[in-house]
Image 1 (cartoon, rainbow, N blue to C red):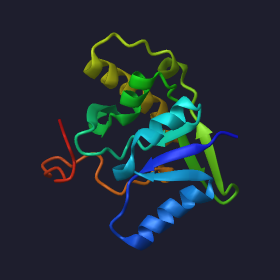
Image 2: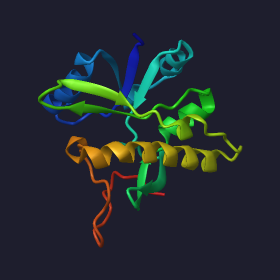
Image 3: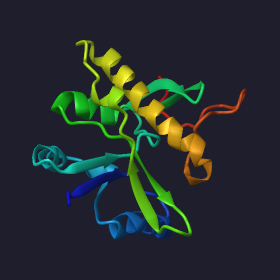
Length: 169
């Protein structure tokens, strides 16, 4: 019964863009293209509404490197930054699709993430909270690896140059 606003990537192919965004709208989400995020997003949080952010689709310049499934990876710092600056709770979650269930949104209630106490060092706080978020998501990635769809490289192969669009620090 809570409105959900999803910050999403836009795809350069209109049919793919509509397919992905349409499936989110079908779930009742207000789709907000990443390039159009503004003050209304933060007002939604103040009203107690839900903001969904894809952590494995980082915006250039808004990243942090943490360990993911045993390897360092650059993910979005945005969920942690928003939570730390607004006091919003972080509830990692996944969307599962399958033949018996059209779509199930399953929050991962990792109480370690909910109880994170910032130490006052912004970058260290972002890294620590993001590490907890990714640890919560790892459980579902390991259980349902076929449900994890990425449209970009995640772990670069050894000796392979990183994609030019990635913002690695």
